[in-house]
Image 1 (cartoon, rainbow, N blue to C red):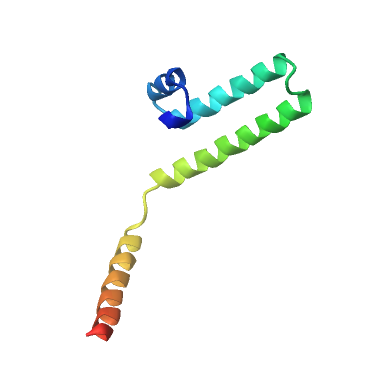
Image 2 (cartoon, rainbow, N blue to C red):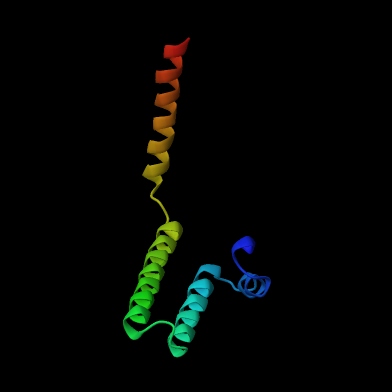
Length: 94
């Protein structure tokens, strides 16, 4: 991420607990600044803000998936699949 941002932005983001949310907040602030300077109009600002909101919602969904505990059956089926795959396919190559 360091090669895509300035040193100041990188240092401020690196200190945050949740870097992705901090980056989206920074982008939202930059969009508001562009709107206040007149470089983007209201509809463009609205579209960009909606896009960031959608990204934030998708990221939240990914965070929930990442922290959700999987049932024991998933581990059992994964191990069984690896075992069957190893003995089923590996024996074919001997």
